[in-house]
Amino acid sequence: VAEGASNGREEGGPGRPTVPLLLRPECVYLLGTDLEGTALRACVLDGRRAVVAAEVCRIEADWPVARTLEAWQALVGRVVESAAVPAGRLATVGAGLPGVVERNGFRTRAFLPPGNWSELDARAPLCSPGVPALAANNVLCVSEYERRVGMARGEEGFLSILVRYGLGAALYGKGRLLSGEAD
Image 1 (cartoon, rainbow, N blue to C red):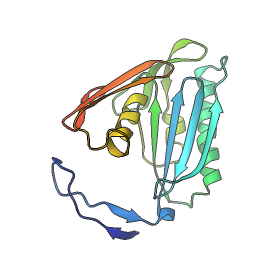
Image 2: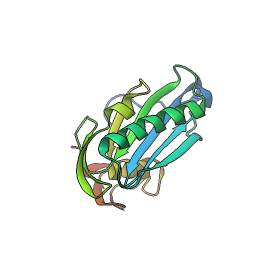
Image 3: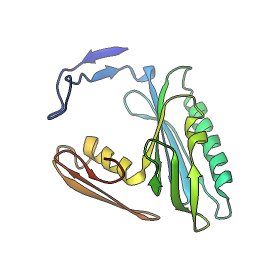
C-alpha cells in the first residue's frame, strides 16, 4: 500500500514516533459528512485527500428529524456509489454535527429546521457504509482541520469561533484542545 514513508515525530507527542505513509490514492477512501443548518453535505476523498464525489442535500423546513436522517442516509449511499469506491476500500466516516454532541457517540441536541431544539441520533446514516465512524461538533471538526492543515498549522494556541446557524467555539493551547466538548 505504501509508496514511501517518512520518519518524524510530532513534537511533544507521547509514545512511539509517528510514521506517515504515502498511499496510492485508489487504496483508501474516506467519507466526510456534515449536518449544518438547512443542508446535509457528504464527500468522498481518496488517499491523497482529493475529492472524488460530493453532494449537498437541502433540508426542507417542514421535515421532521426522522425525514432528515432518512435523507442523510440516502445522501451517504449516493455519494459512495457515485465515487465508485471498490469494496473494502472505504476506511472510515467522519461527521460534523451541530449542537452538543454526545462524547464518543452519534447523538446531539441541536437547533434544526423548522426552528426547534431536536434530539437527533445520527448512528443510522453514519454507520450505514459499514465502516468505523466518528462524529464531533462542527466547530471541533473545523478547528482540528485548521490545526492540522489550515491557517492554524504550527500555531501553539488559537481560538476558533464558528458562526453559522448557531455559535460554537474551541480554544487550543500548547498544541491541544483546551476547551470544547472533549477533555
